[in-house]
Image 1 (cartoon, rainbow, N blue to C red):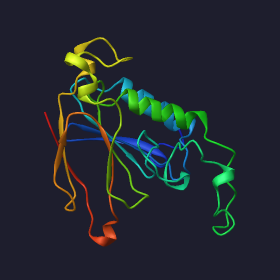
Image 2 (cartoon, helix red, strand yellow):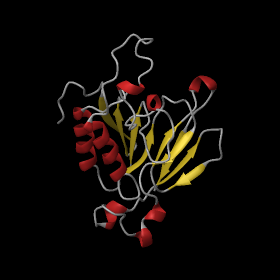
Image 3 (cartoon, helix red, strand yellow):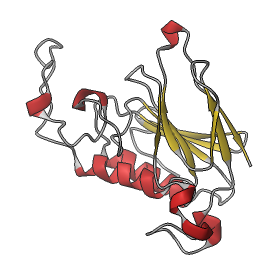
Length: 199
């Protein structure tokens, strides 16, 4: 039983039709240590056959992304030196860099991403742009169905048994068996992202 003040406000989870949804509020561009620990506990106790979707406000900085620091959580250049709007927004200036818990959270999600882990998707907003970026290693990276480097050696934990179909009305539907981080154009412009997760 998790009983900490941020539960339900800064992080939480729900099981919906067999899918574990974990939400984490990172609208301050950082992941706090309580949020990291909560995610670790949830992922350590998830059933092998249960897919997980993580909900964030700000997308994580991942390989292949080229957005500026103000658009990504965990961007290596994020900090006081790149905070150009603190006076305009009348708020304290960002600290000098990312908290270790932010970087550890990103690593946790990458190591727990399908095909070697239960996370099948990360849904985020903030940028109001359509994007799908691989969260972890792809199925092709896992040669001959073996676990990718650093994954647990049991087949049940290193291969995804789910397929995720993504569609948003602006691009052709796509299917993947490895995890992606998805962002979508603004709903005010009629945009949406529909994921269908199947075994």
